Amino acid sequence: MHLQTVRRCAGLSYDTNETALKDAFSQHGAVIAVKVVCHPTTGKSKGFGFVTFSSQDEAAKAAHKMDGEVLDGRNIRVHYSNTG
Image (tube, rainbow, N blue to C red; front, side, top):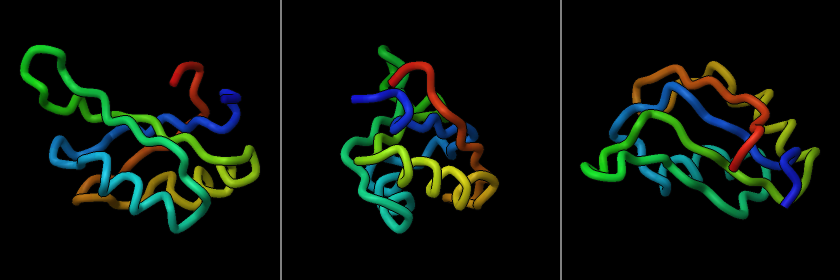
């Protein structure tokens, strides 16, 4: 996996799950993995996650289209990821 294919999604609703995140981003490219980061003890979302795409082009397109969009009532921010 190349880091250029991974996007960090911040500002997620605490109710947004991996299925909802994948569904939203799949409209803009081939999603191969999704991870909503959760607190290790409570299991509740920390409000951010990662989406991995099959190509750098699809990742860039999705980031451009989804940055600032509303998902589950929240404006999300989408950036390149240094981790994933």
